[in-house]
Length: 251
Image 1 (cartoon, rainbow, N blue to C red):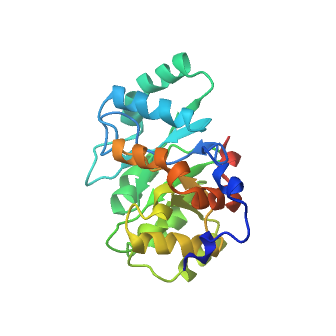
Image 2 (cartoon, rainbow, N blue to C red):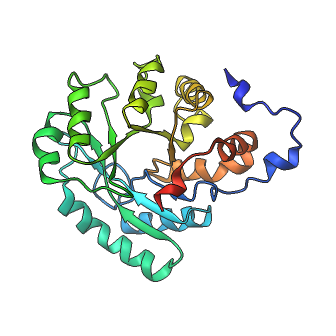
C-alpha cells in the first residue's frame, strides 16, 4: 500500500529540501473564522493560525467555516461579518498574504431547501467546498450535487478519504467524470486521523484522484502537526510536492 512513498534511488537531499508548503501556495479548506464553528474560538487564535500558515509558505488562504443546519447557526451574512476583523488584520499586518472566505457546506435537505436557494459563497471560478455525513452518503446525494451544479457552482468534495463507509474508489472516479473535484486533507496522509484514512488517502493519490489539498485546520493540534511535517515526514513532503495539486490555480 505504501510503495507510493518509497524512494527509488532518490538522494536524501531531494526529500529533505521540501521545507514548507509553498508548492501548494493556497490553502482552500480551514476553519479560522473566529467563534463561529468548531474551529478557531477567538480572533487571537485566528491571527496566530494565519500568521503561521503564511510563515509555512502559503500565499493565499480561503477559510471555510461550516454551514450545517443541525450543528451551526451560520449563513453568508454571519460568516462574512465574523470574518471581517480577521480580514482587516491580515490586510494591515500580513500584506503579502491574500485571505478570503467561503464555507464548507454540509449536503442535506436543509442545504437544498434553505441554503442553496439564497446563494452560496464561491471562490475562484465558482468553486464551493461540500461535505457529506461521516455516517453514510445522503440518499439524495446525486440530486444534491446536480442542484449545486445546476446553480452554476463547481463542487469540491472535502476529504473523501475520511468517509470510511466508502472503500471503492470507483465512485470517486465517477464523480470526477461528472466535473466534481476531490480535496485531500493534508494530515490524512500522515496517519493523523488513523491508519484506515491514511491507507485511503494513499490509494487515492496512487490513482491520481485528488485535485486539491487543504489543511482543514481547526485548532492548535492541527497546526502543530502541520508544522512538524517537513522534519517528520520528508518522503511524504517530497511526494506531495511531486503530486501536482491544483491549488495554485485558485489564485
